[in-house]
Image (cartoon, rainbow, N blue to C red; front, side, top):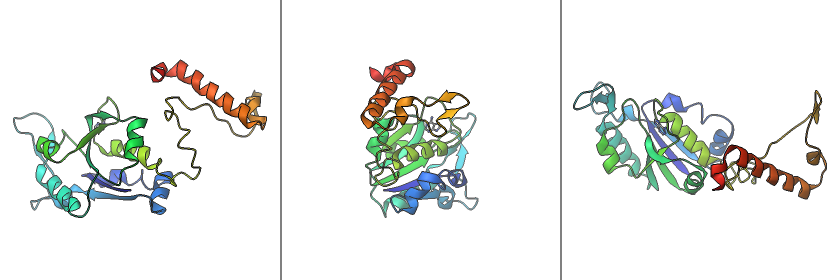
Length: 224
Ligand code: ADE
């Protein structure tokens, strides 16, 4: 999978992709992730990327020219499945959507900032808008990192234990069952004995029951 992320704050995206599973996905060549600085595509000598909003009002708006220059230069080299704008107005990200996008070949993701982006970009260049929740972040970068994490970990080979992503919470509309590791007894608090029994069928049944019970208690809406 190829992912191109467009931002005015590329440094914000360095750390999330430079560790653990997301780094391994890139090191293994399973994901080619590139972060592009929109400022490199600015059209004036000050390298401006934002300007005052027409009609007045607080906050700056990301300008159309640098973003469209950046999108067009990338589109000349790559055919994208979707050009995504991270926005609280977008479709709410959930596991089903993450599963769908994990099958993409090439994605371009635009991060907004300040008051937003010039509406003409949304009308003419963006093919999908995605929100990571009903709250407003300072910019789309952290949302893009969350979205990319949710899809990259599903690509076969990214997680070493192939079954592990499939047993995540939400994959079957159930929350994940509790997990334990050594010691088996910590200050008198014991691990459920069935997990130490070595009887895989019983363990699987216990996990299924726990997942069901936890979902009923915490997220009954998932069972509807
Ligand atoms: N940008 C700002 N807030 C956001 C959100 N909730 N989801 C996606 N992008 C955003």
